[in-house]
Length: 439
Ligand SMILES: Nc1ncnc2c1ncn2[C@@H]1O[C@H](COP(=O)(O)OP(=O)(O)OP(=O)(O)O)[C@@H](O)[C@H]1O
Ligand SMILES: [Mg+2]
Image (tube, rainbow, N blue to C red; front, side):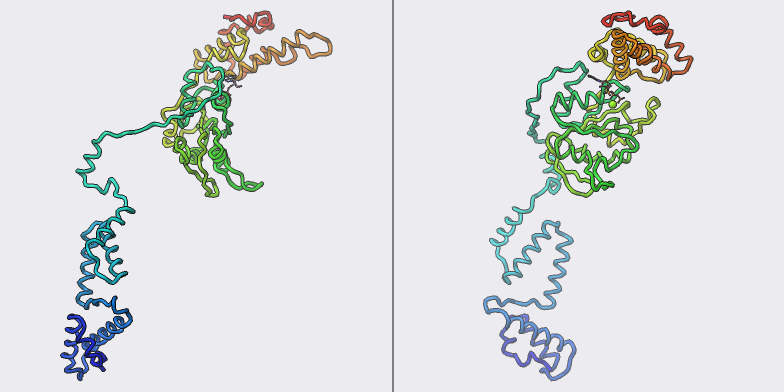
């Protein structure tokens, strides 16, 4: 019944705890003759100990803890994990593993080696430090270094646009630029042609934003023709300038798709993901310029289709917002016709004085100028076979078309203000010099 009795010599020559346990079994089972449940359980443990010891080579034989020792060890571990910081718990586990692996008690030198190795892989973080030590670190002077782009840009004639150099600098510094201004003031042209193409010599890709702009256009997606990559992704990986034309018109939820990328424009090697969750590393030349008729932090009365945008999106542009105003110098340069410019400018002033909700843009000025060029050409080549000048597009017809968008009362006021009858009723402007101001 009691197997340990058969190995009396082995147990009595074992360590003290085993001898004690063996004698206890002997005692409570009255010389191994009486059936006793606790004695039988302890007998089984003794045999387990014997089996495990006999499987080990003699140099690795060790002291098996008694049940009481096992319990106290577990209690100690619990207390240790409660009381010690997680770092010390890690160290404790490390020591335990090492002890088990070698089945030896580790000595002080080994503990030091273990700690050193552990410290080499475990970095102590600032927050792990004592608050007093943290305070001392915070008051120490800090050395920082800015890395500014060191690039030779193509030379081109600088446009007469306010703050143009600052816009270019912003792009080079990795800031997202926002050009805000009335219709036809030249925002899109400035972004696409002047900044991206002429100043930086970089290709651009434009998203014409509206409430219908889809995530597919931005981050890619499945279409009838298969997967199409998004424009944001293309610009990001190829180093193109991403033009977000009329950004305030986009649905604010869709606009959220730009947030992640635009917060990383200035970072090197930043990653973004497309619709297929594939990652793309930023090309160093990636840049973003947005345009809009308003700064979209509120609903607009004049520009109804613009949406109020999330502040987090607007934050991506903070510090790099430029208000593009009408620019007579540029307008005259482009038109090359002072007479037409001055009439248009006079009309624009009148609209402003009367506070009518309308814009007279550079776009209209160009249309008027081109119409004038066409009618002049027709006048010069008078022939029965050609269309008469009055029949075709003229400066007058362009002006009439523009004025027709106002109410009758508004038209009357505007016509009086620009002395329409004097210059337009019988095409009198044709007699004026194109180099002269009319008013
Ligand atoms: N610096 C410039 N040189 C030559 N043409 C220009 C210049 N700026 C603007 N233009 C021309 O003026 C017209 C209006 O410019 P653009 O479309 O850029 O205005 P916008 O401010 O983007 O207008 P909208 O708000 O309506 O989009 C365009 O035909 C454009 O080609
Ligand atoms: Mg535009």
